[in-house]
Amino acid sequence: MSTKANKKLINCVETCVEDNLEGYVALNPGVRLLKGHRIAVRADIEEYQTTGKVAVLCGGGSGHEPAFAGYVGQGMLTGAVMGSVFAAPPSTEVLVAIRALSRHNAAGCFFLIPNYTGDRLNFGLAAERAREEGLRVETQVTGEDRAVNSADRTSNRRGVTGIVVTIKIAGSLAEEGRGAEEIKQVVCQALDNMGAHGEAGVQRLKIKSAKDTVELMLNHLTSPSNANRLSLTKGDRVALFVNDTGGISQMELNIMAREAILYLESRDIRVVRAYCSNFVTSLDMAGLHLTVLVLDETLTRCLDAPTQATGWPRVLLGPGMTDRLTLPPLKLDYIDDIVSDNTQEAGLTLSTDEAEKLRAAITAACLALTEAESNLNHLDSGAGDGDCGSTLARGAKAVLKELEKDECGELVSRPSLLARRLAAIADATMGGASGGLYGLFFTGAASAFTDGSEDRWQEAIRQGMALMRRYGGAEPGDRTMLDALNPVWETLSLTQREPPLLRFEKAVQAAERGADNTKEMTARAGRACNVSASILQHPDPGAVGVAVWLRAAYTAYTACGASP
Image (cartoon, rainbow, N blue to C red; front, top):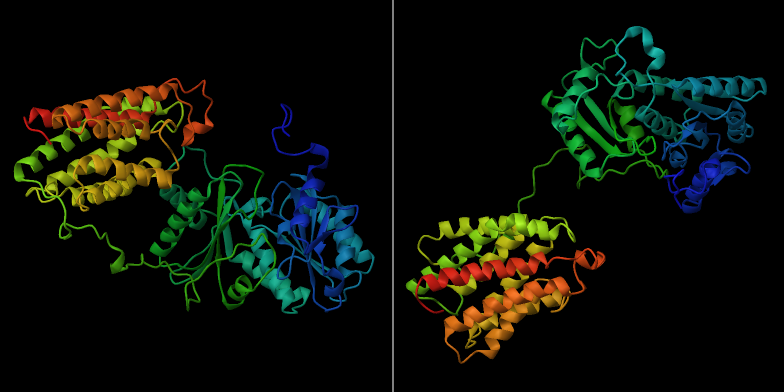
């Protein structure tokens, strides 16, 4: 439970690290905690020590999850030691971890040290004490951040995503049975051929587009003016890593990954591996890192090697693919829209005069919706996203464009085809619930013009509402657009012997009353049902929208001087 002093979903600051680790191992029984310590090890640690394989250790401050416990598992870390939030673990804890991994392991322990002052000091001290105890220990400081621009500040080239990459490499080699010295050699080679635009940054500026941001980051990473640049040459095979520091949406990450791949490939750099994940976070920091690793056969094999660690992302390659490729969109000819002007089906066909009057009514309805956009958005702001008017206006504009293409009147002369086309337009251009509802309404309405019903317009409304009720789950009285449509159908049903234009007029008036009555209704469907009734002071925008286009259609139709 959060409080004013605590805005995170934790129990208390003092135990959050332990609670976090206990939660992680509860979810993943393949990882165990050492009793009384912030140290996570493989559940099969005792068996692993008898294999003669090097144990791989890493660690650092908490708050960077999934680092580092999330990388414990076959193929990556044998153990991880965690400090307090954003604080290096004390040397005594690191020493305990070394003992746990190497006291009964003749192959010893190789551990990676993040290039942060506290980590270097505490891990270094623990390593020296472990050696004094006769334990086999090999260490390597990791620092791939090439945002640092001066040659004399290499001590500040911190390890960010590269820490995880070197963990993967070291863990893979350890599983192969390689010795600590050989593992260190390969890791050093990887660090020499890896670079990240990471923690230090280059300059402070206003947020740019994803494309411009990627160009800024990778230009600096590889610029000859950067003393710590990563040297890339045409034809290089590389792996790209996009790291979320905790507060970036997956959508943004995917877009940044796309732009980074395009940038590198435009320079004839082959991005044969690409990973996008929260490798090393800083709680919920809004930021990201781009890391590039030049690959050879060994490094590629290490990245591809299987691992059980939950923090390492899995990449889905296509059938028969051994390298990542950017493939063009798949084209399937048989999925094209089946609604076409050549659709042959029995049903009502209007005369040229009636078709043009219908065109005038639909045109007026669409124009009225575009004019009502702001008002409908205002009505929607209290219970929804405030975009109902924009959604309806978007669909209306698409319908107007479709009518412009129907110069010969074939579409408006065939109500069934017209209704199906309107359904397709609503679905394709409006989106969201409104697009789906209008798509269902017009799909149901289309059937009424092919089944021989006497009053086809009345039946069209009934069948359209039936589909909306079946899939939308709403009923009249639930404060939705049905509360404007249902009175139309009821009125037409009760006035079958009256003149057509009078019936139309009464139906429009009923729709307007129904829409206005929604302000007194309790919402039982849609997003409004999750909003307090005290906030819902206005009529439902969807119902009002129905009343708007019906009124406009009636006015335009009567202006033509004929009845439907």
